[in-house]
Length: 294
Ligand SMILES: Cc1cc2nc3c(=O)[nH]c(=O)nc-3n(C[C@H](O)[C@H](O)[C@H](O)COP(=O)(O)OP(=O)(O)OC[C@H]3O[C@@H](n4cnc5c(N)ncnc54)[C@H](O)[C@@H]3O)c2cc1C
Image 1 (cartoon, rainbow, N blue to C red):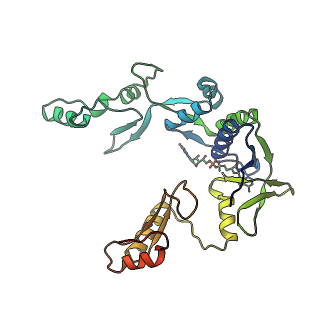
Image 2 (cartoon, protein in one colour):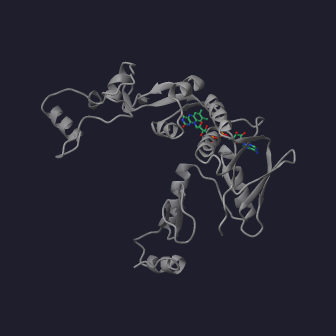
Image 3 (cartoon, rainbow, N blue to C red):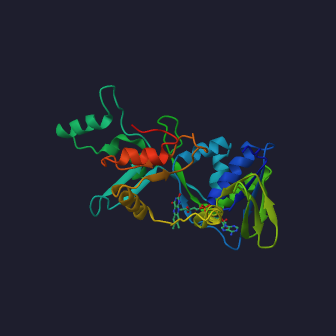
């Protein structure tokens, strides 16, 4: 089924929603209409957000001015993540965003460092990383040589507000209201519209669920398809999957973005116990329509 995407609807206006809104409204201006639905009454998680360096790639893509962004979001520079009392009380480990030392064709830098310890030198590995050395003494510079790799600490609420202004400047339409119902196509199951508590209907061709932990669109769609599901914390999830595999069940694992359709590749796996003699036949009977396992 081919659908021409002309109207994108983003449900939710937290960090995820406004990042999606900013990117789509700027990158596809004039090609697709972007609408965001959010409820001020429900609000956002909106705590301080600690970021990692790819956020700068995202900002470069959108041509966001760093100084303007930092002023608007009460941001500070961040060179890494500090773990207090790491190996023992009083110990501190800085996971820097930079690279450490210079590797050579023969081997990675840490081998040279380990050898230097054996020869009686007493330096720590972090001494060979500009970002670690600078953060130990609370220093920062936007230097070209050496260039430092960094991210920011921001106020998530201010960031959402900043991106909202940015997205609205690029033509995004914001709709205020609580989503009451998710309307799906009776045949395909695809979402066609969101119905708000005040009766407004927001139609679209593509819907992006940014309603945070509620997962409103995803959950409502699962329910309407009468699919049985359970939400599990990560540890519980891993234990459940390991139990299923150990007892001879076949597990389908989906993670992150993926292509759509029977021949699609990426981010999905079929997991099964390779030690069970019957497993090859079980697999071929269940999923052999697609690929036969030898
Ligand atoms: C204490 C704490 C510290 C954290 N620290 C970090 C950190 O350092 N770094 C980091 O990356 N992450 C951190 N996180 C996680 C991060 O803050 C959240 O994952 C992120 O802010 C969630 O953003 P979101 O846009 O997905 O969801 P939310 O902020 O929850 O936004 C959901 C949106 O959906 C809307 N919505 C929901 N239901 C409806 C409805 N029925 N109708 C209409 N609108 C609806 C809401 O109004 C809201 O706009 C932290 C979280 C907490 C709690």
